[in-house]
Image 1: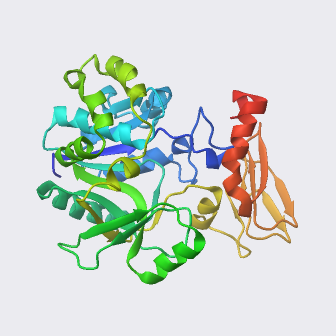
Image 2 (image 1 turned 135 degrees about the vertical axis):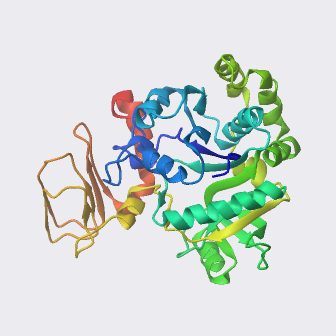
Length: 359
């Protein structure tokens, strides 16, 4: 196991598309959404223990989730939890992580990954990341894993890549963020586009250089306190400086601008688990396509539904097709699966009209 390999797990989101199960005070990365007995962040962390020692796993989260991180991952030390005082999208938190790791180990080689994805083929996942880390250890490269698309999905970003690889790694030609259906269909049929999985690999040296060249307005703010990283003064500096950084994604800030971007076409049973429908797609179902976390559901003339209930609660579902039904005791959601993209907007309306209790 290479001591220069590090992992940063992004765990600061709210997961509002999984409302009402995912709330501000208990976002989906801390839920056992798959019914495995482990939360998503626990599954993600366990996966990366095959790649690097536990002391090289860092969690980037919002400051309000520090205690939840320690509860779910008790082996993580305080210095391995990077607490964002504000939600400024992914570029500032990646820059913060890079500078912190650079002060610990200038030769650090880093994987940045979300905390709430599903990986069904973990051995293939680790093999792919090992290949990526070997490449970025020797090359000035920003690498992102790409997933071979199975459908013209408009909810994902797409990567166009050069056909001829070097060491199994392809040069990226361009990114396209969430195209319309016809464009996505043409991408899939062309055979040289991948879904952007949002899993990145790079050395911290290459990453910091990329920020200096493409997003100096971020790195210049955070590098001012570099002497405070990994000391007792780190959080105080971050609390003051971090909210002044621009709110922008790593894709827009760096990946779409840099010329040294590469990808590895990958197949390891990936799902971003972004919505109830994606959970339904990954869950076991009855002969009529109904999926539920409970044995206490009785279905009559119903198909293709996603049902989530409290333990031991009986439900009778009749005449329902393609619906999401989620009972969280204090909130009941009954929503057409075809309109689930509206759930995030609904949860915002609930917060405005009913207050924080149900948000």
